Image (cartoon, rainbow, N blue to C red):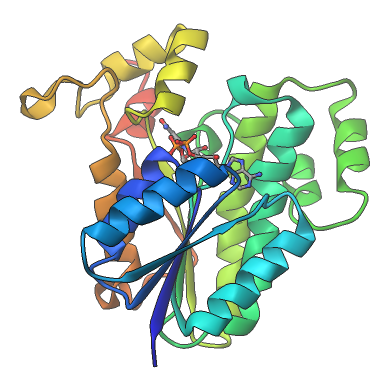
Length: 281
Ligand SMILES: NC(=O)c1ccc[n+]([C@@H]2O[C@H](COP(=O)([O-])OP(=O)(O)OC[C@H]3O[C@@H](n4cnc5c(N)ncnc54)[C@H](O)[C@@H]3O)[C@@H](O)[C@H]2O)c1
């Protein structure tokens, strides 16, 4: 049976890096993104590397119908091996509603749409963030965000916030909820033998990461205190993490070597959360 690996955000920095590595491990690779031009270019480029047959599918994952079509397309290609969900928006890219929809609701929708395709070798890796690990979280908000597909979620969320929240606060809550969602979904996917994990990147040197660095001066300090620091290996990166750090971890999590790993979050942050937990660093 043809093995299929799906990468959402397949035109983005981490999506392309993950897809390139995974193309050597799967028969068919399906890249999907909202950006038609860039996902087409990414599929062509990765196709030229050799390895998997590369397909692409343009979809706005904020659209339930498009997400179902994506899952159907993947199912028609073969048996689900990997689902790597990197599609996302950062706080400086959109308002709070869009952040909630793309960074949380769409993740739940994708995991739900792919559930019928799950077989014992299927693994999903969803990108969360260190933002979902930092600071205190309100248990009432946690339980409200536990069911991202509830039809009245946005209205109840706004009511719980008390006033229009800012995008950064919603990004942090959404990423925290993704970590919890993956743990929960590991149970439903697990009934068919599949695995689900979240992966929380630290400060990674992508356009998105650099945009947030420019918008939030505190990120300079966070980059400075990241124990595995910038400039490692002599590479000239503005932020300490590299897309290859993420792609390597995703490759492992999708592989048989990770066959007993499910329902947890992997921090790939160079020790940032540990450093921030210890104020005396
Ligand atoms: N870069 C960092 O430092 C960092 C840190 C922590 C977490 N993350 C998370 O990692 C993920 C990938 O980040 P990146 O740096 O590769 O960003 P990126 O902007 O390069 O890639 C994200 C991709 O998602 C796509 N996308 C956005 N909205 C979509 C939608 N509605 N439907 C389908 N596709 C959509 C974009 O077109 C883009 O190609 C994101 O979820 C981000 O929140 C990034």
